[in-house]
Length: 302
Ligand code: HMG
Ligand code: MG
Image (cartoon, rainbow, N blue to C red; front, side):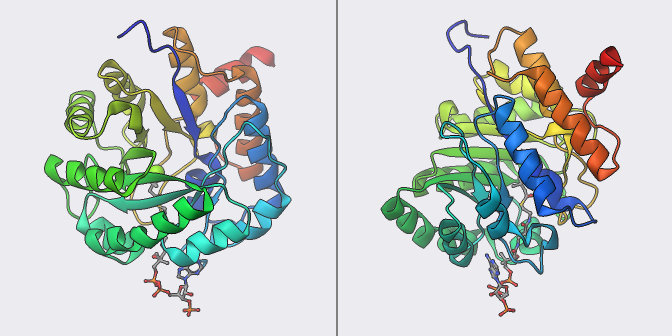
């Protein structure tokens, strides 16, 4: 691992990717407190919500209300997902300064997730990028199913590369590569990252692993070895996509921070404060804490 790159960017996705899969509607005030506490723990990129159809994701129907209630720190970004122009306009009206557009490397997944083909979704993004450039809004891009699809199975690497390249060409400042259903293993993750990094500079890539099969930290490590320096993760390992059968939580932010700091890679996060947030939100949701580090730190305190 190179000596020079000592900082790893963490994009906290718990309030969005984590909560979107929760069956019981979480009160807006709890979401607001979650996001504010995550920012206070030192995270600088805290995904807040999605401006998607409330019929598709009822849990995030309160997106505008949430943004109105949120106290934002000046040095923290609060990106929100937008699937189409309607979502973009709602997001900007609610005060979003950064949005994330999302598509997939698998046609079958994209149809179920956003009711569009890959090319239809890319075409929808063109006017969003134009509006965002005019509005001074930063745009991140997501590619889902980069290591496998719950409907299609294998996803050819060439498809991942094509979609990542297209998002880069559209002007996304960063492209997050999502193992939506957590099927990847380290060698495959590394191969995928390298294939994309051959066409999109590694500094513009992030990795987004779900931990469905317990491979996420190993996959992150493998990608760090080949130049990844941005990692998506979710406090307490909350997460899952409602349109990805069997996709359980994202890798836990506490576990990622512990690993990175242990490797001498700086995150800027106060791990004790973050772990306390993870235990609190797990209690609020009545869920077991999905972070091993969070559980271990809690046990030390009691
Ligand atoms: P559609 O049904 O094809 O949409 O859904 P439509 O354009 O035909 O519109 C139908 C209705 O939805 C209309 O309302 C629109 O106004 C409304 P009606 O006339 O019937 O009353 N509508 C909207 N309302 C609010 N906000 C909007 C919006 N757009 C349309 N933005 C659509 C297409 C994309 C809207 C839908 O499929 C959708 O919202 N999908 C979102 C699914 C989602 O959020 N999935 C999870 C996020 S992706 C993920 O988790 C993966 C990731 O974590 C990375 C990884 O792990 O791989 C990012
Ligand atoms: Mg995800």
